[in-house]
Image (cartoon, one colour):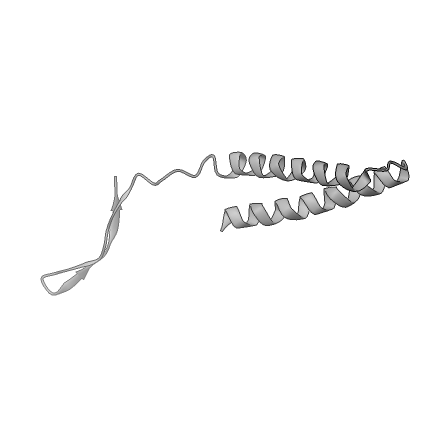
Length: 84
């Protein structure tokens, strides 16, 4: 779920960056404002995705615990547990 949130925020960030860059370049009366804005937006999207995944997914490692599911022993339910 976290990676979908990162991708969604990166898309919002890149769209905002596109419009901001386009607005600034139009105020400066540049002729290639759409192309440059698209390029800056794509670059910003890639950088945002890379930084977000490295920051948020860097600590996400597989757990080292083993799970023993609940079982029935002598007609009674024994709780499940985690063990190292």
